[in-house]
Image (cartoon, rainbow, N blue to C red; front, side, top):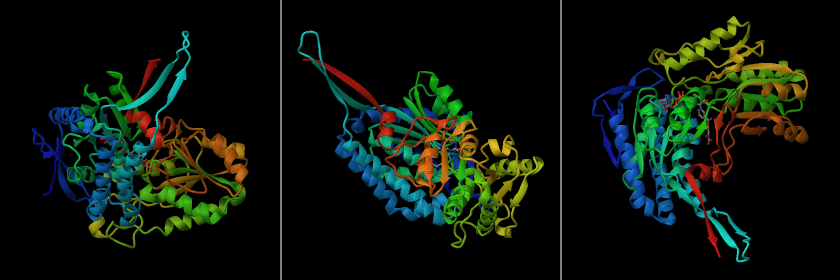
Length: 486
Ligand SMILES: NC(=O)c1ccc[n+]([C@@H]2O[C@H](COP(=O)([O-])OP(=O)(O)OC[C@H]3O[C@@H](n4cnc5c(N)ncnc54)[C@H](O)[C@@H]3O)[C@@H](O)[C@H]2O)c1
Ligand SMILES: O=C/C=C/C=C(\O)C(=O)O
């Protein structure tokens, strides 16, 4: 059976403890590989390697050399596209059509975009007056923040990990990555690409394991890491923030959401249905930006629900290697238990189940996979846990509204604030509502349309900080002001 090892200081190494855990294929429940679980010893070795690399050739390299290497990393991912695709689809069960259009190309783009960006961003300068009339000149320079701890989730493994590693390395930092225990393979494979691209040893390190009392906690408790960038659940973000408080380390947190879609009666119904179907069901609903609350203006409510139901019922469930399928399993049986507990709660709370609500019948070879039905409810009260808590499954609750004010108040009513989607053909309304929504990202007549130069992140309990474009530089560099008296 294949083993997945840590990647530390340019070499693949196993755990001293010899502890291994199973990497399961969620489509059929079979073990794909055995993964080494890092103890404090491996995490410490990875952090030491990252610290040494910062002081070594990486730290002394010109921006031109560094960014040329990162372009080679991107090209290396593209050259091994099929291997990355296969690995990502086996670990997650997601359809190839999805991973080949989103996950893997974005993995490569995340290195190119930030390599190009750091070459072209100027820093600030201020001339100032002084009492003697000679004046002084202030100018800023950016320096790498140091060793960055990267902790990533399982829903878009390569995409979300490289979204952090790309800018971190472009800015001259070194990294220790702890990928999700559910999806270790592409993060491990990237080590080979890094090596072939000429990334010096110790710049990119990977340790595998779980969160609490395992590699994740050992990394966030390690005193020699300068900052942490994390994507995952809000509760985990709180834990990491507490650990990072020791030694006053900075955090960038991309956390959970309970995102609202607002569909006005003046929308283009075809676009609104297509976009809402994608935002609720893509990646089996396991997208942080996904829509789990849909508010629809009353005159079109019945038609919208009927068309959404028809769309959901046309989704084709199947494993990644089935070219006709566009809907995969959840990440694990454990996650399915959580999702199904909300399916049950919805019924207990009096929901009308428009479609789905349970486990689909799958052929025998997939019977042990983490399959669930795409599910739509109506009729829940606004305070039902199904409507207020992030489920992270292929489901949404649809509720009618009457006025624009009501829709904005409903959308803003939760402690989350990651993303929203507005569907309307009235351009004035679109701008007016977008300006009032408490969310880091608002899409108008679209969903998950991403320009990597833009600020990405959540408000309220959906996160701290923004990454993307120049905003990544704020986190991955230390800006230093130099004041010269003339
Ligand atoms: N805002 C965003 O950009 C964004 C993007 C994707 C996913 N998410 C969120 O991520 C969640 C789904 O991902 P998940 O289930 O992998 O999240 P998670 O918080 O369970 O795990 C994320 C990572 O943190 C690690 N971890 C867990 N406990 C830890 C601890 N105590 N110390 C250190 N590390 C720890 C895990 O091993 C994993 O690598 C959802 O809530 C989703 O909304 C947010
Ligand atoms: O599941 C969350 C998806 C996040 C997407 C991004 O971080 C991105 O597109 O940069």
